[in-house]
Image (cartoon, rainbow over all chains, first blue to last red; front, side, top):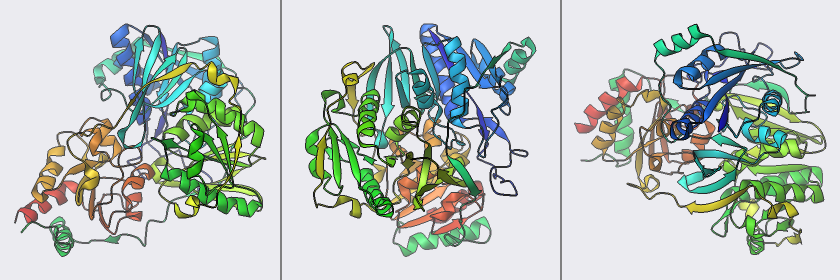
Length: 263
Length: 315
């Protein structure tokens, strides 16, 4: 079984996100980029499938993505069999206001999959910088493949795949899906495995990233970003000032006033 | 047009929110509010608030199934040609909307918190990057799709009982040639306790940083005699079970006090707790979206605050 895992880096949400001076997009220059958390879950689920049934796992990214080499080498260090960087042959794809549009990213990955089909395409259900949708359903529609998103487990069984799809409140559906299929993973069956730095360094030394040119088809019309800005958070929370002890006193006071303190 | 969601023969709250919003937008356009009801036709009785209920009934639609819904909805879209399709930004929205954007050739705005018609143009506000950035968008063309974040709109206008015209549509042949099937519905695991019935919650987010640090907040919860809950990243990391997850894909809670420690306040989390009576948030980032819903906040580091709180609570 051949499993392709498209991955990308997104701005690290722990940091403040700067906007461009004209407020039409995020300012990418000083941002820290990390592997998208859902893509990390997707890679883990793919590796679990490999552990269970010996599948081949190929991590795929776009050549222009920030930190893509690091991300792909880490995937190899975690156990992926191969890593591929897709370069846009037409040169027409460039980051939009929030990053490369899903429509464009999906077109490139679909081009690769048409040339090198997979049994399963497993990617994160969403990404923090998604604006015009999510990758898995977009890819599936371009390739006319069955797809399931918000998956919390993916297992192979007699030539098909059993996917657990999760809904609000923890209810879930167990689906049987014919392959080839595209799965959008919400969380893997276990937390993403760790790749020791030494192994990542070994992967870098061994080389092993393949670069492929793919042509991107005509861009579909999509949403237009008029403006980006930060939400107004001021004027809501009353900020408690002082040392940790003083703030703790104030919070305890709030609880006591509501009769929620024991004794 | 609103895509109705239902489970256990009950139309979802989110559907009513969207119907209400659709009415508002329809007035601006001089059009009608239609609801696409895929599944048991008798659910139309719960959709009196719409102008038209477009009904597709077929065994494959009894419960939500991605490919069945997608094929049935495309048939509805082809026959009714709505100006705007609204879907909740939950599992169904994350499953279908982007695929429909390709197949129906319509621009899609996801993570939408506000939606207007501005001189015939559909405009939307999308919350991205964990709610830290708002994007003001325009959806060009004669049709568009928006997946709308729940919990921000009122359900009352959507409920209505005036009664809708029901238009049945013949199920497309594709529903008999699906490439997937539903094997089992798995109800939520009752688990250890129900956080949605707790009077107060000590809730922890990414800011706790590691599983080892969890015992710091566990001690506070213990001292207060209340349950520990968490945002999605903590549960996905395996540091707390799914039954403790607050948010759109977890549980909605409305305690008297919600203490948010190291939670940034991504839209999916806020949806699960914004109606708590008293929200106190602790986050070192003064720009964290959680401060937009919290009543009180502090940028003191939780690792300094929590031991102080434990000391004072234990007395």
